Image 1 (cartoon, rainbow, N blue to C red):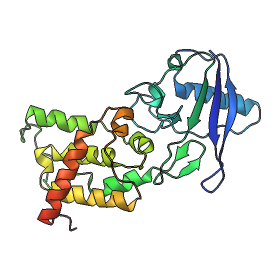
Image 2: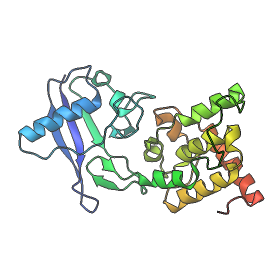
Image 3: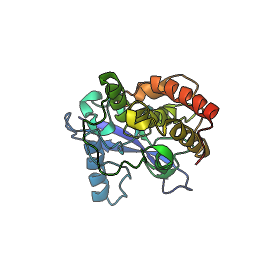
Image 4: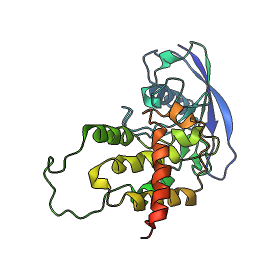
Length: 251
């Protein structure tokens, strides 16, 4: 297979970027998009050009680092798929493919396709954990968890923090990410003690980071590689209101 690849090139955060055009030849249909980009970089190095900066790690759809806008869609055209699990057979032979970084005010571009998503880390640091001191690790069966609650919690825990929801939202909202991280604990007995305080602190940190507001158009759910439900956003909003009424936001 052969492709024309239009890639965003930007030397640094303060530099002006532009799309540059390259050719990708003899691409296997069974190659992943990341493998194709790696082969492109090898070719660029052989030609004496600087390779395209991008992120990738596990290559198993787990870590969330392989974040690219491909033809205007976060992670590309396949639903419920990360960039590293997207295969070139998903594209028509001879196609022109445009590759850009995730664009959002809270995700500044560092170089080429690499963006700074540390805002997500700071949100999680505000409450994406359980800090109750329980002494030694309790027996795994000591706290009974109803099956429906366990499954809902695990659905939320599937979020890999890639940022596709933010990059696809016209407002750059992080509500799907934050709601998933909060719901992971809000649906477990162990997470109840800090439930409302956790919600308030994470939402307030999200606002400080400059993420936009949610206007319920569901682009986030549509592009999420783990298909996280927007129902978690409703739960987050309810918990935030309850927490405010309870005065649960103090540190």
